[in-house]
Amino acid sequence: IIETCSFAPRLELFARGARRGWLVWGNQADDAYEPTWATYSHNSAAERRQLDQLAPDSD
Image (tube, rainbow, N blue to C red):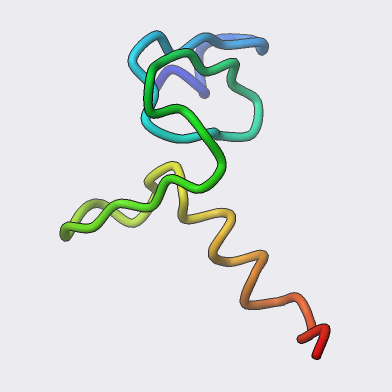
């Protein structure tokens, strides 16, 4: 809802993970955050997982 009615930049004060278009602040706000429980499909790590799946292996 916030993304559809507010212009960037946006600030999340209780962030657990980074999200494109948002400034994040919180003691768990880093790029390595990954939810370990069942959650909604558009969580903060979902976009990163999609990009990782599309990227070719560097091995």
